Length: 340
Image (cartoon, rainbow, N blue to C red):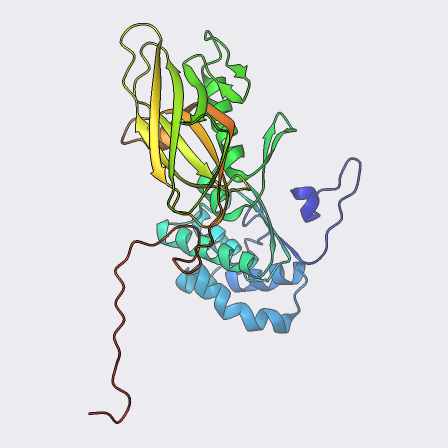
């Protein structure tokens, strides 16, 4: 990221960029502690290639966004670390960059400022800015990114849709934490599983691998699982994905704890294909997570099946988007202007 931003020369090779780059790397590291916040805004803006007239035009917005009050006229050396970060963040996101580089910099300030920062990033992206985001905030990856890369030991371990890469990351974190003294995870044909248990298969009730459906037709899915002893708080999640692999919806099913030895289970899920016209895939995941701590879940298995179905009806008269909106609709004729 420092090489792309131009602050670190590459040992070999080249990087080509087009347009203005704003880098949220070590926020505040470029501030002169002896100068005031306002003076540092002008210096940082000049470094980013802005003319003074342009900085004058956005100065008020930068100060208002940073929200550090009268400290804007005080030397930066009197700032708390949080205040310096807020000001630096505000400068970078107001220069209208063509490329925005973010390194774990969204967790700045209190909850209100974080929400404001996330909204500002969304606005920048809506204008067509390219975002390079590196971090461990999985929700931010889901919110901002269209493609994701998993890095491991300095090398690319996976490239794909954000949700797919996140699942792989969670699985590897769990595998690494339990590697010492535990059986290593083993691969299976269509996905992966751990020694705690796995998804053995997904199928439609009639045995087909692909279904062509009308809107509202029934879809029945069987999922076969294997659970090992003492596996508590386990759940199977059956996901419906679009053609790009983006999860659209799903169902979490709590599983009984294995009493003794391994046990095999069959789950049956039935729903109506009340979806827009298109092709959809089915995936299953086996996770372990207490009810109140879903963010600590362990991904035991992700089963990538070849199961898919296609809704062939055009539902434009029924709803917009992917799903119908449950709603009561009333249309009332109002009297024209001048009528009694």
